Length: 141
Image (cartoon, rainbow, N blue to C red; front, side, top):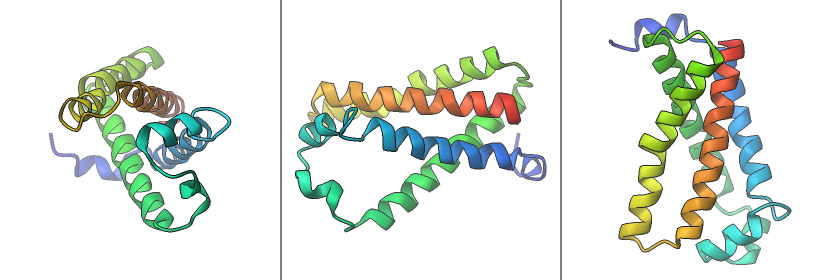
C-alpha cells in the first residue's frame, strides 16, 4: 500500500506533537542532570561540546527530519493495520523499537566497537521516544 493517498488524512497535528516529544525526550535524557555526562564520556565528545553552537543547526534539522520520519512511519503502520486502541499502538512501538531501532545500535556496537553502555543509553531514549509517539498518535491520531 502506497503512503501517498494517506497524506491527505494523516494526523498532522499528532505528528507535529510527536516531533516536539522527540526533542523533549532528547533534551531531558541527554541533559547533564540525567544521562548527558555519561553520554558525553561514552561518545568521547569534549565537555565543551554542549556549550558550542557549531553544527547545532544541522543537528536540530537532522533530528527534526528523523523524528518526522519516525512519527509518520508509526502513524502509517497504525493506519494500514487498522490500529485503533492504545495497546495496539504500543505493540507497534515495541516492534519498531526492538525490531528496527535497536538493530542499528547493536550493529554499531558490533562493527564500530561502540561501548555497550552507549547502546543501552541510546536504546532507552529511543524506546521512550517511540512509545511516547505511539501514545500521542493513539490519543490524537
